[in-house]
Amino acid sequence: MPEISRFFGIVIKMFFDDHNPPHFHAFYGGDQALINIRNLSVFAGRLPPRALGLVIEWTTLHQQELLDDWHRAEGQVPLAKIEPLN
Image (tube, rainbow, N blue to C red; front, side, top):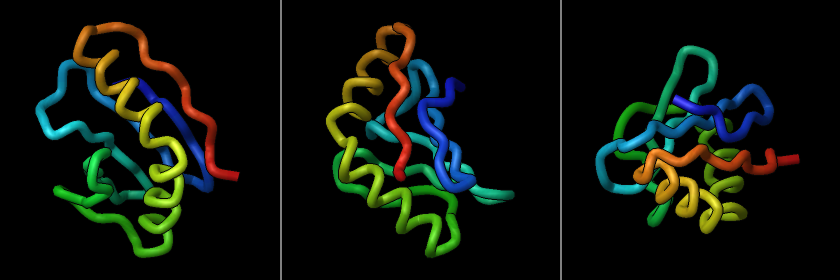
């Protein structure tokens, strides 16, 4: 599962050829959440509220890049790194 970004202790990864809906995996400490790229919702797992807020903020800034990476992953093409939240 390639890492596409890392910020404030949060690691963002995406699987190749993963199931719909388009999503990514966010890891923070021992927690993990799956985030729907299109509607910014958590549909599996959980993150602490502060970490989740940072992930949602980052996602709104990079939504199109995330969708582009999702399409790359579907085609088994290397994923692009995405700028971290600063």
